[in-house]
Image (cartoon, rainbow, N blue to C red):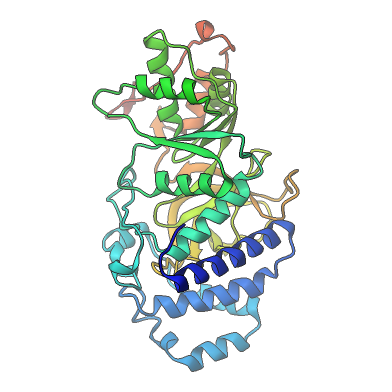
Length: 396
């Protein structure tokens, strides 16, 4: 990023170098995570004390004595104590006044965005330099294991209000990868120009949602255009289970990854490695799991539940113990990639289960049935894409 102010330039370069070093130490298992978490949590609590959302409960964190006492505590014990004391922030509470978490005047942010609103009312998600830096490097250091500067990427995210398209463009800049960020008119749904650019630029990588990719492929098929071919698919924003990944791989000849996982409000909490596994970004977040048994920290053992996130690099808009609504499974099995970061698999959202014949049915159940028999030739596909319509208690 380019800055005219020399102090901003110098501070930015220093923050980039520190974040890269911390990320690489975390990947290698060389970072003292308890100490890093304690230090970042203290800084986050001090910042959050200046917000309307947390100002009253964290008023003591405006006092230097509170900070000094916290720094004298054993790091892991301090983090556990603070998580136990802080209330969980529900999605409903956050959405009712999302700007209340801001700790800076709006003019001190770089960009203003809002979440897409696909899962509820849109929330404020402005980007400050520090959180943009951390998020870009977190994703970039992961995707750098998948992409090289010889790749090129189509970023196809129809969400001009949301930060995702811009964020992934910055990741490609970080990696030295040519990117083209496009969108499609939702009324006409015309992909002709995009298909032409894919051919002319020899784009190797698709970045976007599975549904947008399938819509583009469907358009090409209906209009007699050759289906675009890719080397990699970096999918996000929607649940993408094994059957869906295999389906789009057969259609495009690419290796499909669930590229990243997170939200406009939290940033990217997990990103893929070259083995196709999502890794929690523990250098930037504290993770907990919630279910009927209560809430507990993610410690690396086999577990599942609703993900609860404390953001450690979002001091301009801190989220403390934010209940994401996302169901995940954390694996106890180390990843073949060799990184020390925990492996996580997304299970969809808590409200995504459909009732069918008295039973709960998930998206993955439907797709495994639809695409079990599909062969590699498009002419033999029984289902290219699908839509489920709810009519009262029935699914059609």
